[in-house]
Image (cartoon, rainbow, N blue to C red):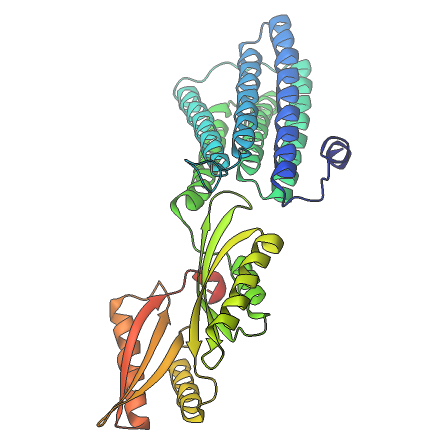
Length: 397
C-alpha cells in the first residue's frame, strides 16, 4: 500500500535528495494522516454515541488531536520548502525540525494526560465493562494506527525526516494506549481484577519517554551536533579524490535542514605547485561538491612539503610515537623550522572531545618526551584541537 501511494502521488519519488520530492513525501504523509484520523474520529464518535461510552468518545477526540499532528507536519514540510531569501540565505529547512519538536510536545502531553488519568484510576478504580463491539472497534483502531505509524516510518526513513519519524512515534503511542485499554478489559473479563490504572501508568511512562527521545533527537541538529561519520567520510573522500589534493582535515559541517548543509574543510596541497593551479583545483572541488553532494563547501588550502625527505621521515616517526601513546589521536599541518640551537616541530594535535584537560596534557607531555628522545634539539610547538565527527562511531566506543 505504501509503495502504491508513493508511486502514484510522489513525482520522481526516487530523487529523495531534491527538496520538491521531500516536500511531496511530507505532504503525502500529512494528507494520509489527516484522512485516517478524521475517519477514526467519525467512526468512534458514532460508536460512542450509540454505545453511550465516554471512553470511546474520549478516544475519538484523541484521534482528532492526532489529525492536528498531521496538520503540523504538513505546515512544517511546506514551510521548510521555502527557498532562501535575504533574511534566510540558507533557506528554511530547519522549520521541519521545529515541527518535529512541536509533535514531540504533543506526544508528551498525551503521555502526561494518560498518566494522570491512570493514577486517578489506581486511587479510585472505576468499574469496567466488557463489550465485544467495543473491543472490535478498538482493534480496528489499532490496525489503522499501526499501519499509519509504519507508513510514516517508511517515508521518514526514505527522506530522513525527523518530523515524520515523530509522527510515527505518536501513532505507536496511540497503539500502546488503546492496546492497554483492551488488555485491561479482557483481563477484567477473565479474572475480575481491575488493573486498568496500573497498565495505563506503565504505558504512559513509555509514551512520555518516547516524546523525550523525539525532542532530544530534534534539538540536536538545532543546537549543532557532531558530524555523522558517514557524512564525514563521504565529504573527506570526495575532496581527496582530486589530483593536487594530498589530504584533508578540520572538516566542519553546519546543518540548515535535511539535505541543506554548509561545510568547510582544510585541503593539503603540495607547496611546490603554483598557487593559481592549486586554486583552480580548489574551485573545481567546491563547484562539484555543490552539484554532486548538494553541500556548499568552502575549502582552505594548506601547503605542505612533499619532497624534503628529512621532514617526511621525522613526520612519520612522530605519527608512530603518537599512535603508541593514543591511537585515537592524529596530527596535521606538520612543519620543521630549523634554528641555530634547536629545530621547532610545529603541528596541530587532534584529540577526542571526551578527553579532559589533564588527559590532553598527558598526551602532549608524553609526545614531547618521545620527540626529545629522537633528538635533543627538537622542540615541539603543538596546537591542540578537537575533531567534529561523532566520537562514539569513529573511535568504536
